[in-house]
Image (cartoon, rainbow, N blue to C red; front, side):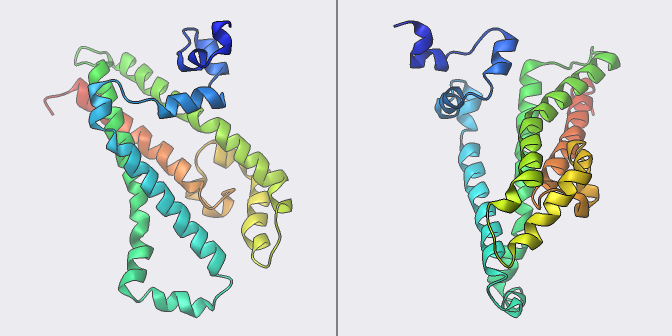
Length: 228
């Protein structure tokens, strides 16, 4: 059997950048990439971040699902009273857990930049600017396909997938803004105008992109001027 038809083909990284780009959406290849163990020492030392990220993601999904499902079904006064309890306050302030994702992004970016030595004290500012643009463009391209798909789904078909007394209040604003202010979401500036966002959770994409840019500038400065 040819090698291309075996699972080993999907476990092997391709050399050509064009092929890597075309296969970046391969379900089988991405499955093996996600499930393969870390080989490097740094990867093994920070493997716990995957578990922490997964647990945090499940918690965020559960909280969003809980409030979206039960808020219209119960008396709103119930949730207002819960906000006065210790457990209720813990849930209301659990939004700070989102900051951990940004902290992890900054940590891993610092490790990668420090190990690869892409910026040194001898690097020119022109080189530093090039590195900054490359990192930011790569980060943006990672978000872009999923964001475009989300805009398309929210603008065209999501309103027809379900029905209910609370459905239109949540989904129809996303459809309207997805058709009129989609460019703000693509430019990652929709968090400055929440009413123009296509989905309640896309503010995080814009915030992550902006804070990641600040992280990158700080790391480049620290690597160029380690004495500070």
